[in-house]
Image (cartoon, rainbow, N blue to C red; front, side, top):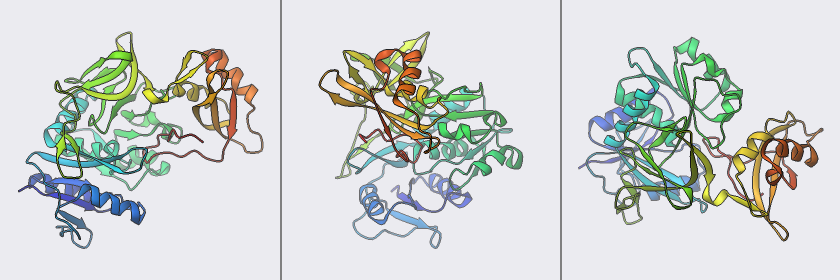
Amino acid sequence: MPRLVALDLPPGPALVAAVARCWDAGDAVAVVDRRAPAAARERWFAAVAPTVVATEDDPTGRAPDGAAGAPTEAGDALVVTTSGSTGEPTVLVHTRAGLAAHADAAHRRLGVDPARDRWLACLPLTHLGGFGVVARSLLTGTALDVVDGFRAEEVAAAPAALGTTLVSLVPRALDQVDPTAFRRVLVGGSADPVDRPGNVVRTYGSTETGGGVVYDGVPLDGVEVRLAAGDAIEVRSPTLARGRRAADGAVAPIGDADGWLATGDLGRWREGRLEVLGRADDLIVTGGENVWPAPVEAVLVEDPSVAAALVVGEPDPDWGQRVVAVVVPADAGAPPTLEQLRDRVRDRLGAPAAPRELRLVADLERTALGKLRRLRP
């Protein structure tokens, strides 16, 4: 009977070896967030319900306290969680076949040579964006190094020190390391990085899709993308999660009867490439005009006085919604003005996208993968 092994181990060779050992035995794994608060860890363990827990003191695994683990099917390889607006974990089950399909398609698109290339995993392994690097390496026999979190100096030195050629980063990291030192750099996120070098590949995907399944607007081999009613992006792919697990242990498919997953994103085709406009519920309708936050944010951060920016829509009696720019100043003593930012956005994107309100904050909340949490300030 396959087991679900929770890996309560620090990122590094021991964790990678544990994944390989579990997969060789036909078991599935789930990586524990060792930095999570105690209450969050309790919720995670309750939702994931592992059969055994592997630790540094007991790498072979022990049965967890409490109820028996959730049933695991043959072929399951990874259980990973996502959090919605409630913060409660949503449990997704990925198969080895799905992870292998993604690894093969991604490596073919990137032209990876397992005999010459080397991955660096520096994103959280509790998320598919980080764990996917480990999976691609193990399933294709490509060399891998794992570091415990992103540290700019360590990542920047990796090409010379370790021979790293491939890395997956968050967009903000491109300002902290030289991306051209790597052969290929994968970057997720909704906004296209400014002045992106040619070796930086922008990816689109989600935990449900098995990671990035569209590279620079072009679906990976075997991945189908279509626009449904209202330009809603739907994906059908062998990389999709087997399903979403309910509290009773039942796993329900994430796609419809024909295998299509509704991503919750909107997009359009431009010259044969998919352009992702944003989450359907992020759209701002102001004065009858549609404004997407990501392009506005990209223009705002080009201003030298802006360190980071978030754009949201707020109810407005005259416009329906007004565009609000929430900005972290580069220099708290010399913050940008609303007029300054309005002029910049108006010149690039038109008057409807220009913010009508500016809020200055000390910082913006982000996910572990560097994505802005798009909550009302």
